[in-house]
Image (cartoon, rainbow, N blue to C red):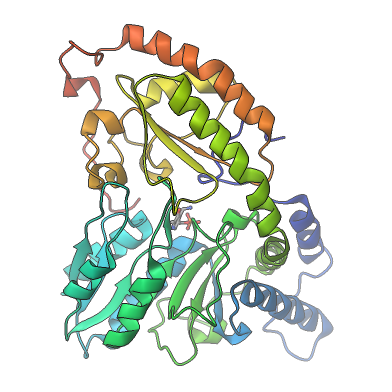
Length: 405
Ligand code: PMP
């Protein structure tokens, strides 16, 4: 079903066991969990709380610390705006990084328009945020530090443990977007000083359109969605029970299978990475070798446009990404790679492969068989090969407004 699919970071199939767990909650048990004194409401309420227990158990939290949302975008918005609005009388300064997902970057821009001040920390050539920069940027009026757990595009696992310690010592709340890391790095909030954390269902093979925010006991956020008071008043709206049940099942399964998934995927990933780097000239790994997500390969091929690579691989039945999926609608190079100091024209030639639970050695074979030939053919036609002038007009530069993405 997933042959040649090497883009799990953009979207993942839902585990058939998860689908099975969800079905009765769309057919038999369709009750509203807010309806009291009726067994259909009881069944829905029970399913909701069971799922909350699974998601909490997955990260070492208490069930009361989990708020279900419509996905990671909503959870990130809730974290950033919810803290900012709650703590604005204490201070209006927020620290984040330049490599965050757009669902962090864009709310922070919005908060700036409301009068908050945001410090965006740079990254080094491998995509790491430096904890010393976090410490130096922390001020008396800093109310929140938000740095993602891993940068999914280039695989960099951020030093969030150290950053959270710095935040704690300074008495500042720490939020992390764990979406890219949650399927590959065990997370235990009972030992890590994270105050708020974003989780997504689809990234652990649950359904899309559901996610959660972990909020440590005692941390207060302003609600953004007002209504019937569901989810402790923080996120009103009749709960997406089937989706939440699916997320719960996915979290339970991931808790049991993460270690085995990682042990199976890492060697395949290494074989693909080495195969491309050694088998094709003028290729460079984006992101680090150590402290790298075990399912990520991101390599730039000099003198080629990622889009033509993408198309050629697609014709061979192989799905990958060039740059970040979220900005692939435009032909702008990835802001993550630019922030790492990778040149505009080089970032265009980057390919991102992400493995998942149903990846096989056959997928790796497919790529290693066709990519060298594709690279050679495209380089022959390339306007960027050595000796040719790099011409920016080759890339249809679109005006790109991040609002509304
Ligand atoms: N954060 C990160 C790191 C992501 O990769 C994504 C997209 N998968 C999101 C947040 C947003 O997730 P969603 O589109 O499900 O809201």
